[in-house]
Length: 208
Image (cartoon, rainbow, N blue to C red; front, side, top):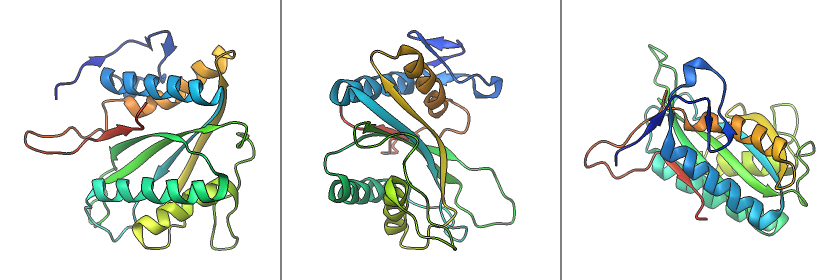
């Protein structure tokens, strides 16, 4: 598949992540992100959007990211449905990790965005990630336990929380701010692109 890139600071009336090192952006990824965002707003009316990163244990080496991505979404859907009922929409971008010479660390990690029903999840009350000293709770604990089940290992320190947002059709300012933030996943820099004959998609989303 061929890709199109843009150096513009805005796309389809949305501002893009403002950092010169992030340009250009992948147009096809921006379009997919807009499709999921619009679909989420159609379904939920008011939407809580959370962004987080998933990393692998340092000893994993290079991994089959497709397998772990599939396992994570499967585990998350099951655990989420059991605890909250209903469903969510998602975007996952597979990213290159910084090269750490002399280590066997995986060269890949995941950037993830979830779109949730804001009636169930207020963006300032999403729980806590577990640490070595405390148990987790709420949505973040569901996400953590889903990743832990996927890698079959302790996941403390491997889930990194980013900003969350509450958006709606009526609040265009908040929605634009959210898109600006999550457009970071659409940057060309640090992306993998499938080589000829390679059957993997490095930027996936929910069906809209």
